[in-house]
Length: 364
Image 1 (cartoon, rainbow, N blue to C red):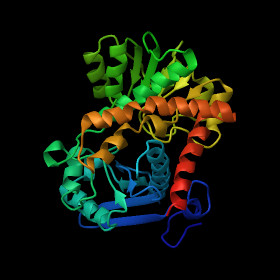
Image 2 (cartoon, one colour):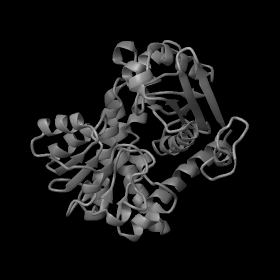
Image 3 (spheres, rainbow, N blue to C red):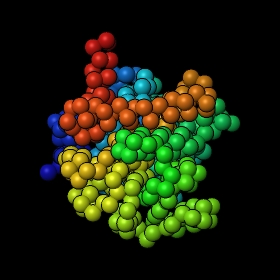
């Protein structure tokens, strides 16, 4: 069954009827001259203008792209709330292989689409988009962050994203082992791209034993040549089974924690940069039942959004790093709330974020 656009009807059901929906606005953008096909999803503006990155990805179908935009936008509402930002949640996806179709004309057309929303959505980088891309988008849209310093921006947000994940790991270690140090801990990182390779630097500097994997051989080679003691494994299937793994860090695409991976995961902690790590509702309970501590992804990976939000008001790196360092305290507070309420940490984080958004709505 399809709707009037030809998309599967379950997309509209997700938007209007499911708990994963409730979005304020979803915009379909097209520019045939440049080949642009994009989806902009605004989940909430309760706390302020929606803020979230632009993902450029070769989705199998338009329906998959819409579903991803909806999920990512909802996640941004919760992330921004937990980060203490005066921003709601939004996300955009551009459909297609960026290596094949990305062009200046396409990015300018996308910038016009974002600008047409009049500031309700503020965009930034995500998978498949980079600082140089945001510089192009900004030529058509002033509601663009993640730009280069030469163009009035803050530059690469992956630096503080990795720093925040590192703080989440430290908080997890403090909660589970009574000491925030990661020295001699075995940490496995799946995905060592924009964020993951910075995370490796933090862990190596502290003396952790680091294992990595990535589908791109050049990414693995870059890390192992920089850090000779880092061990590369064949794939994620091997990584999650590493004997004695203390912490598993999913830092690629979402859905890493699912019915297949959770039962075989050897790690005692999951704390990574990827968005939407839980493949479906209930996975957080599966982790808890196995005694695996889960640091909610949208809490620990908020360093980047803290940075791009600050860019709107005159960027100061030290101020942003201080805010990102508070992810340590926020993560500990979530673990404490989870223990007090007898619920998994993911549910505790959701409750705190939902409370902040609800309070903002009542003040309107």
